[in-house]
Amino acid sequence: MKNKREIDKALAAEYALGTLRGGARLRFERRLVNEPELAKQAGSWQTLLSGLDKEITPQRPPERVWKKIQLGLPPEKELSRWSWNYLGWALAAGLAAVALVPYLTSQPQDLSPLLVLNSSEAGKGQWIVSADRERNQLSLTPVQPRSVAPANSLQLWAIPAGEKPVSLGLLNSGRPTLLKVANVTLSPGTTIAVSLEPQGGSPTGQPTGPVLYSGAL
Image (cartoon, rainbow, N blue to C red; front, side, top):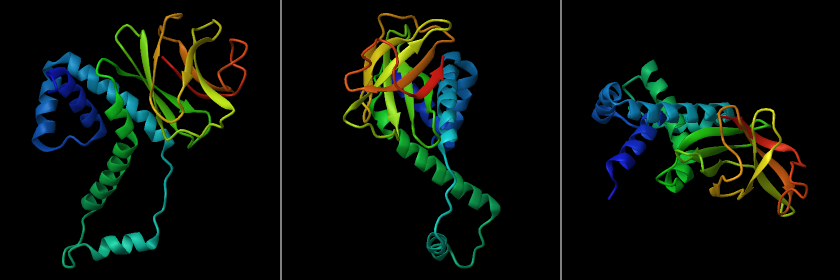
């Protein structure tokens, strides 16, 4: 059975995503006023999810889609502008929820969102980075990532300001990866990056291939 901490984390995620509705949302917003830790969690999720907007490309649906929607509506009631806005919001929220299902279901209970690594090319996915309170353990979850050839590996790097990159390990390109941080301090200003390396990782101890994803603490 989930404890209160786990429930609050899930509520904060739903609130930021926009899927927490009705009385539950009102009760949650009242709690935000009096519970700084809960407000911090909700703020972290909002910052984290805002990065997904950069990867959304507008798509014009086929005409047949709109016709099906119109045929399914009550014939004698004209949709208001609010109704169409709500429909668009619901579709967007649904797409975002689908993209985040692997992250929400695989996230270790003691880790919290830290940052989003954005692709160097638009539309090539992202990585969600979470960490424990001491930042000694990281979880990296891919969101619609690019495919990686068998001859290559994705390698994670920490780059403290003014210092050389430090390897944090290899990433699984298709599912969440849990890594321990033992040889570098993840302080504010540190850049987290993912490079494309030969299979098994960089042979030099430093990045040798292109940087595919990056973000700064």
